Structures are given as structure tokens and as C-alpha cells.
Image (cartoon, rainbow, N blue to C red; front, top):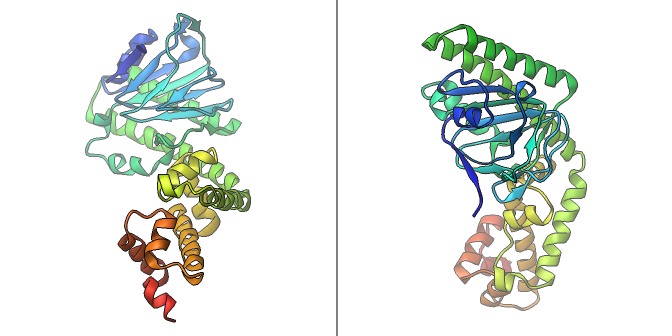
Length: 297
């Protein structure tokens, strides 16, 4: 059975690594100041940013292994499990950790805005690669936040100041995320070719007969992307959605089958639909016509 550290409060992790406890709802930890500590596989009940020069190999998030670059940021959100299971080894790291409770956000604009930061998602399995100036700015903001916590008692005004700093740091992270997305978009045509080839292979091997229509999750995984990140890249490359691309491919296959003499029921089955009316509904949604109307044109 895996050893899992439950982090229901930001200070659960602070105590584990023997860092100072500064506030009940937020923890700012400077790894460079700590004695060596053990690895931990964490069950997060909090949000967090791990901002480090280097990360241990083999870090996981959910059921996936993270692809981590040097001088980068890993973002975590409540409800996920991530890290590296304690194996008895003690490690020294360089960087910072910012952890905060969802309670800190209650009633603030950031409570609603945080959902748009897609780099927190379980489906984003990479790290945010910082430029040197970004790393400097973010670490300076963390240092200033910690100084606020060290010199001022908890109060509504302090929490408002902390939220301001937090919002700024999250915006820096979002800029990095969007830049990486744009860099991936530069290879968008190659991705679309591989996406199209994958769909061709799926139907050539008749996987739809046992597995049904290909899903975005399946395609993203087969192409080594997270579903949400994959969807963002497809959207930037085509202006549409990944599921829309799949549906368009399926309907083009349907038109070919119909024109080659297959009836609606046969076409539906050959494409992996559970029921003919599901096929008819999608066909009309995509073409504006029912299969019968299409054949009658």
C-alpha cells in the first residue's frame, strides 16, 4: 500500500518538511533554507505551486508521470495526488513552494477566476518553463508575500494583500502557459497530420467495433498530450474543437459508406455507434441533413 501524505491544510506540508508555519490558510516555503527531507506522495486538499530549479525524476500527478523541465513550475489543485512516494531517501531542493487553502479565496474575485487557469488541471501533465526574468519576478513576489506574513498579524487587509500577490503570480504562470501553448501551435500542422493519421488507423483496425467512436481522451493520450492541452492546440490550429474534428472525420466516413450502398443501420454499426438514431442525430448536426435527405439530394 502506498504511503500518501494528506495535505488538507497548507501547513500539513510545511510541518512535513519542517518549515515555519506562517498563516492558517497559506504556506510559503523556501526549500533552500531547509534541512534535507524525505520524498512524499501527496493527496492535495489545497492549491499549490512548486517553483524549482530542478525536480526529482519520476514525479507523478494523478495517474500520469509529469514531464518536468529545469527552472519550471508545477501546479497542483485540490482532489489530486502527486509527488514521489517516500523511499527513505532525504533530498535537498532549491526553490519555493506556495500552498493555499480554497478557503482563502472564498468571496473573492479570484475564487471564480481560478478555474480559467488551465495549468492546474490534472489533464495538464507538463511544467511551466520560466524564463530567467520570470523566475526572478515570481521569487521576488514570494519573498514579499512571506515578509508580509512575518511582519503582520492576520486580518482582512492582510488577506486582501495576499490575494493581490497571489493573483499576480497566477497571471505570470498563465502567461507562461499561453506562451508554451503558442509554441506548440507552431507545430500545429504536424499535430493535425498525426491526429488525422491516428483516426485513419483507428478505423482501419476496426477499433470502433469494440471500443466505439474515438474520444478526445484516447487521441490525446495516443499522441502524448493531456486532453485539455491537446484540445487547446487543436483549437488554435483549426479554430474548432478536437471532438468537432473527430465528428467531422466520422461524418466524412459516413458519407463514403452511404454513397457506396450501405444503408443507415449498417453505416451506423460500421462506424461504432450504439444506435442508428445516435448516428442520424450527429449526421444532421454536422451536415444540416439527415442521412436519408443526404442520399436523396
